[in-house]
Image (cartoon, rainbow, N blue to C red; front, side, top):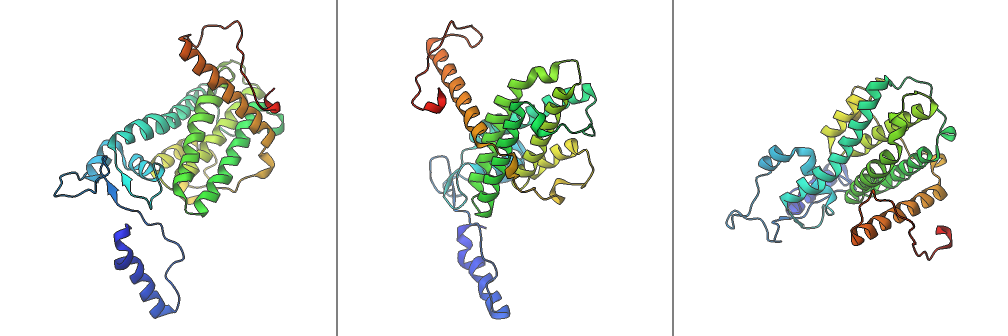
Length: 290
């Protein structure tokens, strides 16, 4: 409910619960502030700056609207509503990255006949980049759970969004394409499928509270054990601390930063990404980056 229901709803619940049962009705509540127009003005029929939420959901989908409202700023702060951000930030960036990653996985999984029933490749025997993405995944699960427990929905959404775009789509999938392309269905290829499947399934779990439809769509296509009919009947597993490798996370982050800096320098010098360089020098101020 909105902040305007402080007396009409929130206080009334406490009042009735205290009178009838001698205790408050709830311990925590997430209250959203006013939704403003893109210029920061309060939406008002007299101003003609209101937005019909059903029209917006018809255009972009309820999941995209919810994700936008939760991820752009904390619910309890006044929110300047900009419809363009739903299509540019949520759909074009996050949802597209998530769906493209699933599309990549499903296309090659169908070609190779991957079912998820194959013998599991132990994590310790998988390539370093597999161990890294699983380590990052468990780190994100830990931080996501802590944020949700603190009712910090915006931080939780941003953690999932940045992980899906930067680490999974732009880094892990791009670094591992050849493992999925190659003809032999060996342990290395099997490890790649099992790793990406686990990452996608866990992402679906974290997305589910805010974007339930896209999460269910992913789950129905990724679910191989038929343990539950719906993702909303499952509980997100707690973060596995044994899979978190802080040193590996730090080293891979350094590699990501270096690549990002190199791409920025290429753009500044107008050198195409695929054009080979004789050498590149990057200044570092941390011994761990040498």
